Length: 486
Ligand SMILES: Cc1cc2nc3c(=O)[nH]c(=O)nc-3n(C[C@H](O)[C@H](O)[C@H](O)COP(=O)(O)OP(=O)(O)OC[C@H]3O[C@@H](n4cnc5c(N)ncnc54)[C@H](O)[C@@H]3O)c2cc1C
Image (cartoon, rainbow, N blue to C red; front, side, top):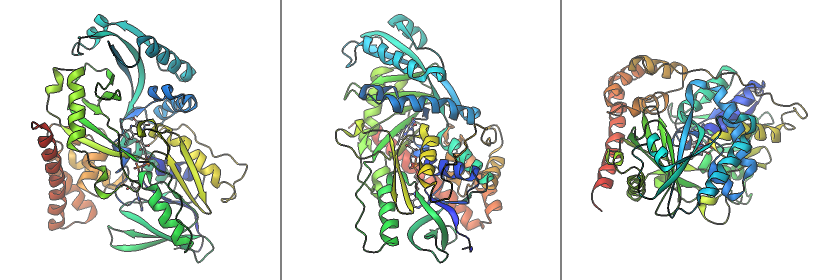
């Protein structure tokens, strides 16, 4: 610990914490960020990969949220043009759908209007025959027509890593595999965060003027831990969160390049088919989990996989027979609210417990707004009242090209992108996880390069490689069981 406290310790290395770290560091604050696993290991690598306003939130009247997010869609796309891509979506209407066609058209008109100058392309409506000309595999029975609109598909994990690199380039210290355990009054007048560096096997003590808890679905637990250890005897803070799990299946490309927005027959939920990096992501589910989520709370279940497969088979009968390549699962850090979990608000909220701030809720798309609102609450404490935080739209650092050899990608990931394991490289720094063998062959050279960079001996290298293969084998087993007859 130094004699001058840092301005901020941020706990949580998903897009929310990284966004706060970037904005703070870019405005000259001294910052350290602690992430207990890898950057973007939580929801921030398991999203639907969309920068969007969220068409479906219009139904619940969340106009402000949608308008702000549509403007962020443009701003974030300009930050990372190589990691984002405007994509045309087809929204088919079938006889018997919950929403009549006129209502879908009204929603798309409203979406265009709320985007204003940030609109990417005006929506359109087409007849059934035209919809099938665009996507010939769409089920034809009962198809009445389709709406067409444009949103942005992004590479969630790599965008988060780019934000981390931008923060680090402006002085932020990024500690992965480091878990915040407790807080106490610091020796030089700040708040001391006690953390465990699981990699080095030692404790880390960092003193700061304020702490930002940006731990996503674990926000309630970390808040309780920090607040109750800083002020022994303080009552447990009331829960803020109502987390829910969402699963996606990864298929070989299922469409001719369009995204699809489908209505699930089983429960009228929205299901996307998202074209991403040569594959299709199909999701998502919505299963409420406890706060804090139990250890197994993030794992996809057989029922969720079957639900997605069944809905896909109704919409795209032929391509849906393709084998599933992979499954992703993440926990949404939703704000607590009454009603069905699927209708929980996607807004965010900043809660102040003295020098500890918790940022809860929100969406990936809104990460810059969440950072701005968090720092605004801290401005007085950090001696910056009345001085706005600047957030220039300057491109984020870019990752290496996918055409580079696996060793080179791994070296770069270790040197510049905070990677510490084979999975960090394959799953969150590259698109190797989307190749037909899921990065199995590349994992060998990746482990060799990481061993050289991180000082692993041969036993450690083999263990790391084995851990990677074991995780893939578990995923394959789950997919096989889900594919068996129920
Ligand atoms: C299935 C699904 C689909 C989604 N689709 C979209 C979409 O298309 N577009 C969109 O805008 N949003 C989407 N979202 C929402 C978006 O992904 C999340 O709101 C966002 O990623 C949350 O980021 P976060 O940083 O708050 O949480 P996370 O990414 O979960 O990060 C929290 C981090 O805190 C760490 N942590 C926990 N405890 C500690 C501790 N004690 N010490 C240190 N670190 C700790 C965790 O390891 C984790 O990495 C989706 C979410 C899900 C789950």
